[in-house]
Image (cartoon, rainbow, N blue to C red; front, side, top):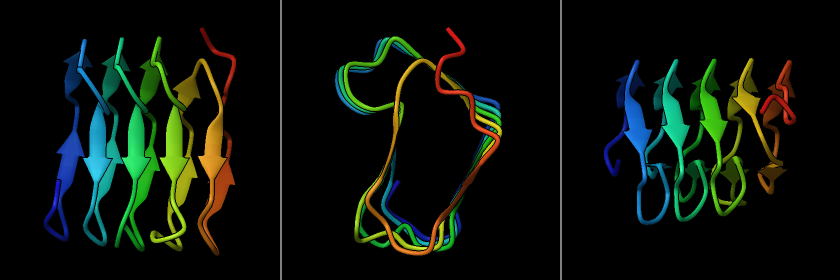
Length: 104
């Protein structure tokens, strides 16, 4: 997504060629999604994804990181996600808590 204040909840994303969900706007809420078999990151919080929430997602069988936060997206809350790989946090001031990176 490119806009601010986006809400992505309860979606199933299977077999994406690149990233499953791309956050490029502030204050996004990515909650309760199932993402599998992506050609890149499961969820990527890139430019201007400040103050977003990434919670309670199931992310598996991705080529890249389960979740990646870049230096351009700060103060993101990442909580309660079940993943089968790393959460790569390159941001400043983000909170990562209660994530299972070896769930699958």
